[in-house]
Length: 411
Image (cartoon, rainbow, N blue to C red; front, side, top):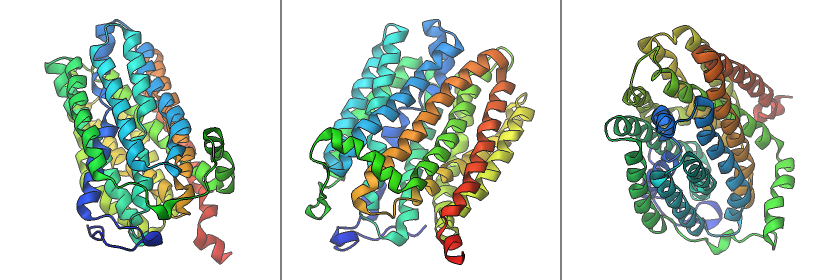
């Protein structure tokens, strides 16, 4: 992979470009702040057993976390177009730290749910970072820079799920959140040293009051309708990911399969593949174009989802569709962001707001639906839910081709 350009004067509106070191530090921070939402995946059965709740009840933990994240992004992320990303990222990281501490020491299920929900509401930093980086890289490197940050996110998800499975099985699920809080404290202290404050050149005529700033998301999104379509597509893609892995967390630890939470974590190590493939696929998307690339990968994803129902009886056979899903899943997000991160810098954070809100609404609904369906229909019900979501994703990806500049120019 060709590294991002070194820090030097220039770039968009004369801004300082990110160095390779700075970009990788941002990727590390993105990994840590993103990981917090994924510790629950391999240990979901352990937490449910400890608190004595059913699969549909424990499904409220990831569901409300994602819905709260969507609310937090809507109400808080637009501030990134007015205030320093550095300041906001640090404040929200501290909020995540508080949520993790509540979860680690919760003595009742509903306190745990409250901590997880507040954690979700505070998880804004991962979505400030792409907009921050996009203002400090050359346009021709946008795909690679976005892919580098996404690789950091993948690494965080990987460590969270593999590590949480092992720690939860051998030390208890609370130690997962003790460790997460400690690492989050480190990142909260580190972020101000990684990021720069707002440049004077970034000043924009943003609305003067907070309600106007938040509500300005709607007219800006209406001016760029493709953002809404990309957000809906990513909402489906994220929903498929959560449905599959939450379902696996319950399925593999069931009496039928008989595996432990550590096995669910080990299976998540499939994501190691993404550390090598995602940057290369990001460069491929630069060459192919985000919309056409998204159609191709959505078809691969649909093929993989279909196999889940047939291979659910065997841990080893499940590896094939899971490899395919992990290979293409991040690229759906990368290509979605590429459709609007080349637009004017003054509106990117608010466009990201609309995109991410739709993403987490989809993820939250799918999280609860997956656990509810599993409780009533088992693994095959979860697989059918994922197949329906994937079919809709393919359809919307095909519809989005009408926004492709190459097609419009030919017309």
